[in-house]
Image 1 (cartoon, rainbow, N blue to C red):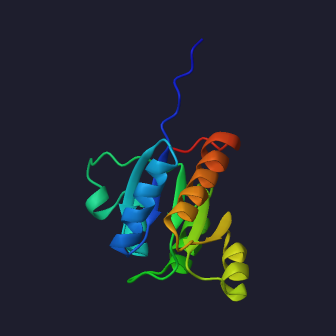
Image 2 (image 1 turned 45 degrees about the vertical axis):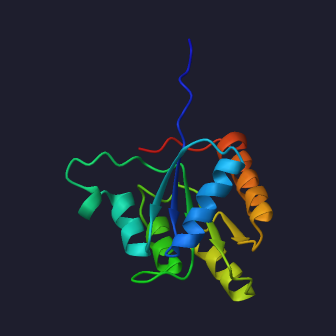
Length: 150
């Protein structure tokens, strides 16, 4: 029996258009396979995940394999969004990688307490970002066994 390879869906929540573009380019440069979707704040992230608002009413919204989450966003920040994701039985198994400029111990500890699966400080150089994206793709999309998500 031939199993159809799974198409991975990466959902990135980041309010900075330049960071989104750099992430897209870095994922391509790192040859990370999958559909990439962007949202600009925590409220939009939860709308996407819960298939409501502009992501409801028959719109085909894929369930992400992986969420890349920035912390400092308008409307609902990354902490609030992570808290909501990990409290929802339908969403809590989706791995969430916090990708932010912070290096603060209070952020690192607090986000792991909220259920983050990884915490990575965004590198400032593009080559370093490509390496981070390659590592994320290799680990989360090729190495680990992820639960079946609806």
